[in-house]
Length: 147
Image 1 (cartoon, rainbow, N blue to C red):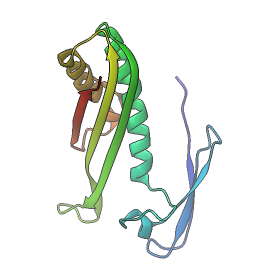
Image 2: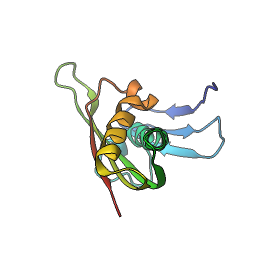
Image 3: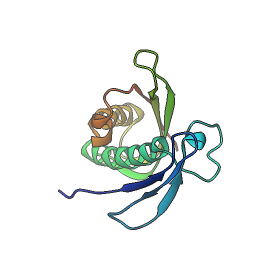
């Protein structure tokens, strides 16, 4: 299996500095990052490690769920997956930590009922490689079929 890469070029201190995150494997984009926008309510045109983790998690989860739905005998027509990654203070060690991830999925699926979809959704939460990498963070799931 391949290895994917990204790199960040950072200048300055934490509070006054900024950086550029480059998706080097795909060469698709370079994104601005800074700590003030990372810890603010508005991203102001910058990304953050948490947003990049959310992107990775939602994509990974969607792929894993589509596989588990098919294994359960269903056909996924559409899966709308979002991931919300929260950053907060770390009271035990100081600094910051990821305080939680919420996966939300709405699926249009043929061939399985709500119970089978819920099982596939829970199994995908546990089985997707990004979820496995983030075992130190509480991951919650809100999954539902739509007609």
